[in-house]
Image (cartoon, rainbow, N blue to C red; front, side):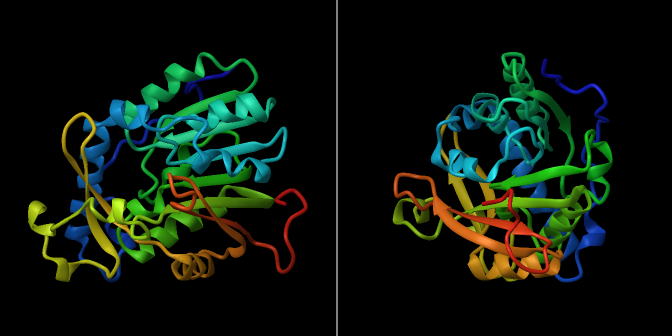
Length: 275
């Protein structure tokens, strides 16, 4: 039967906890951008969860990379839709989902009660905190999944440190699957970009590739997003002791709205259980 949190400690966000991650971007700006996204996901948790279905190709496209009977960490799990997919397509999996938004974790836990074939645990934890991995049961993991997360994390070094933390909870044959949002690739996405003046942030204090995007379901909201392209994925992998084994694109009306990458720590050659 699925669980919904026993054995999982609670790690709320602590202002300033991520500041030691940043040698470049101003610490105050990092905190403001993180807070901006926390407010968005807290305010729009229900509407956001309703817009993310289990049948979305931005989720189902990773199925070929998920082995049977695996222990999987979903870092930044949102409403936990990967747990539903695993229950349908990979029965016998052990799943742990973590997210910084308690409202999304509650959505995920409500769904987990319907899962008969997956051992499921959800934890409230912020992956931008230095010690977020301390809450995790079932470590080490066969696979860590980081879907649509990195583009919401300000500062390259902080993004790399999140990936390094993921490395620390993988087993020796483990690998990581990530995806990032290609919101600059299509005009309908670019129309969501708004001026940083709306939140009182000077664009000169940001990294190249940082944008402010709006949301209009259930009201108007604003999110920070960073454009993580193929080049940055390679740089992030190198900075976090990973090797990029494969990349592909999927999702959205266009079929390529998300960039996916499969990473591992092998010296050469792909893992047998990845491809």
